[in-house]
Length: 246
Image (cartoon, rainbow, N blue to C red):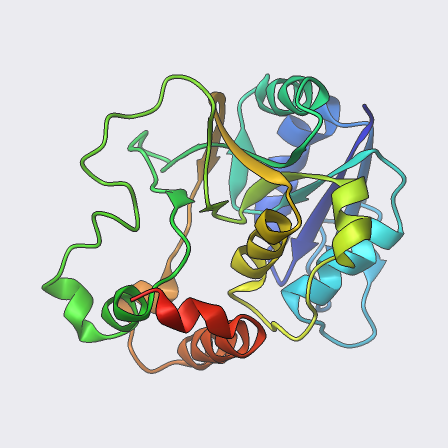
């Protein structure tokens, strides 16, 4: 199985420069997309967008410019362990219906990052996207309180910072929904994958460090908050049955 990596950078040239030496040896093909000028380090060949695109549109662009059997969607603020991609690749090769394979994400200080999550519910979304989250712990959504998995297990969805995606699944689903500007495209893709019978696997032996700024969790009224709510509205419009998941 050949793996193509797509790195989308929006002004993150320094992160890309730190990421590539760790990522490039692990993949067969790599594409960097510079969403705005100055997003790629000097000397790194990149696709330069004439105008900024949403994250989903950039990932689809990267997929169209690559040929691997699987596509690795990579955030610039990630740092994979030396065997992270081979571990995900080996798992996908031996699980024919695995459409998405995600690693164990950790913060730069080594703390576990809750990247394995349940599909959204109405009440859970209200809590997470309002000040209520300071009072109500989202233990079920983030699988908090459960023993840390030591073996691969199927999951609803995983954070989109570092995901291995089977190309045949992407082709079947029509890729990412470009109606999502930023936030929600990873949930939407994995929800559609679930409905189409594709499995989503969390593979803890693959370890990736992820800075994950989580801006929308720390500030209430920003442009990113509005993008997040726009993503929520789009997800509900596309999948109204989730309104029954209280």
